[in-house]
Length: 222
Image (cartoon, rainbow, N blue to C red; front, side, top):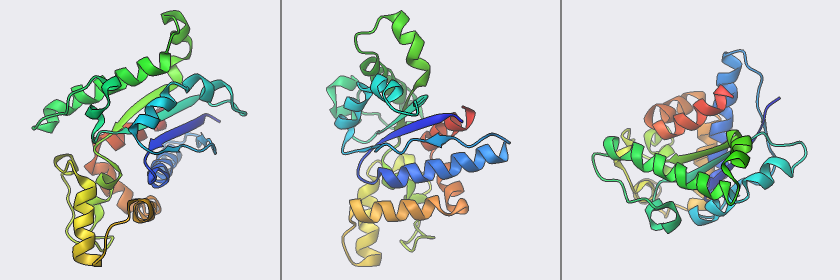
């Protein structure tokens, strides 16, 4: 059984991983593939900067756990990633369909540089196949926006790439529908978990977000 560890940014990362796990295992089952063995090690960090620090520990995750982890997936938020100088990336501009591919590939390259560290090209080549950097556009709330109607939060936003401030958009819906403030670390995991548990909601979310599909597709392909 192939072992995988997923490291995500933000306190709501548990909900994100639940969505990824549920959909990956469903698709692998449909394709006649064995389920993946997801690591029980803590995979949530608080902020993009901390996630990049976890990239530097890639070799530790691969070879210092029992059972050994074969693949490590890192999921960084696209939102404000340009504020981190180590990523060497500029904020994408509209139309995002044109600017995001280069933006994402640049971030992935920078994450790989951090994971490689001081290893020689030959040393890195031996272990790089287990390193999987991904960029989620734009943040966890981007996965809630397309299913807000089903979650009782009002009219959905299907073009999530156009909504660069998804958390603020969810906050506005909470004020209008729930008459209270959106609690990112409490409400976020709750709604993401509800999405994870409902195949129809997952399908809508996946259809709206190519960056999420890229994560799921790569895990299914292992």
